[in-house]
Amino acid sequence: MVFLVIFYKYKFLKICKLIVVKNAVTILHHRFLQINIVMLICAYNFRKENDP
Image (cartoon, rainbow, N blue to C red; front, side, top):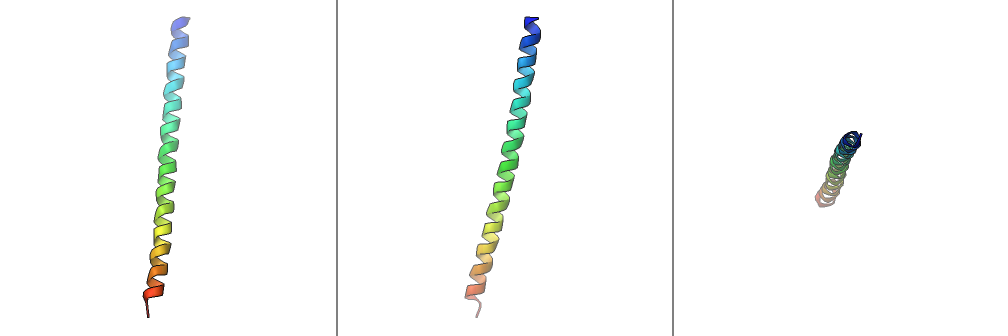
């Protein structure tokens, strides 16, 4: 009985960890995409201003 509880707790923690890691990766990925988009917009505006 105690073994089962420990097993489930361990499994639950493992799943939680997986979810957190997955979410962190997704957030980082989205952040990275946002930064890329911002940089593209900045580069585009910079080029537009400097083009005669």
